[in-house]
Length: 277
Ligand code: NAP
Image 1 (cartoon, helix red, strand yellow):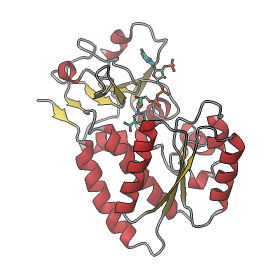
Image 2 (cartoon, protein in one colour):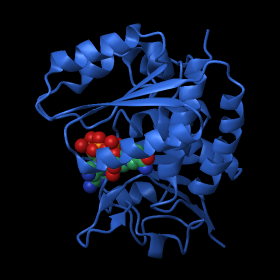
Image 3 (cartoon, helix red, strand yellow):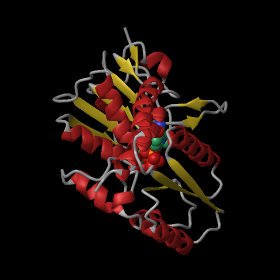
């Protein structure tokens, strides 16, 4: 029988524990989110993050800019937030408008306030085997979900499709740190199905329908990170759920799998950053 990895249920459990923790904090965590441009999905995500923070008693402020914002304006705002002792966590919502160098912007965030763990300091710590201030939200959420369902990682072959700094690379490193044998695939990978068929755990973070029937071995664990609108405007993931779920042992749905876990991790990270010395 295939088990659906229920990200909403785990998110709600994490929120309940976090709310109790935040209630006891004399000084509440404060999350600042920078939203630049008018990407409709980004607006929805940021709104959702603000609502979740408020539900947990976390202060949250969203700073919005038009798509014409300059790099200097963003850098100045980040400096101000870095210096503001009331702000404990900073998130820059991606993607940024195309004329902005996202690396320059992310690099400007103080590592101890970098709630998505994306600065060179925190990713450097992650990739050198040291502990970053916090782990990137989506990869952290994926590992929490695997652990919640008691899915073994050590010694298993994990195949990761997608090599972004946000998801693919950090999740591969975190699986490696948990003693998985990891293979990474991307748009230039040849014979993708030959590789995915050897996976015990498959993680797809692409944003296109890339995982279909006959691409996996029986009882594979399937984590679908992708979220996009298909040709009918319906929210979809990278995996053809109908066919793949028939042979998977565990599978995360879209929506309701990794998405809620990303928000749960963001809230966990916000609280963690507020209590570091
Ligand atoms: P990204 O930066 O666009 O990276 C996509 C990756 O997919 C790239 O490494 C690309 O390869 C690879 N790729 C593209 N076409 C491919 C193909 N045909 N076969 C194999 N690999 C292919 O994306 P991202 O930021 O990691 O996000 C990926 C997806 O996850 C998106 O749908 C995004 O919306 C979603 N996402 C969801 C959450 C969540 O909370 N659920 C969080 C973050 C992202 P190259 O490197 O060779 O170009």
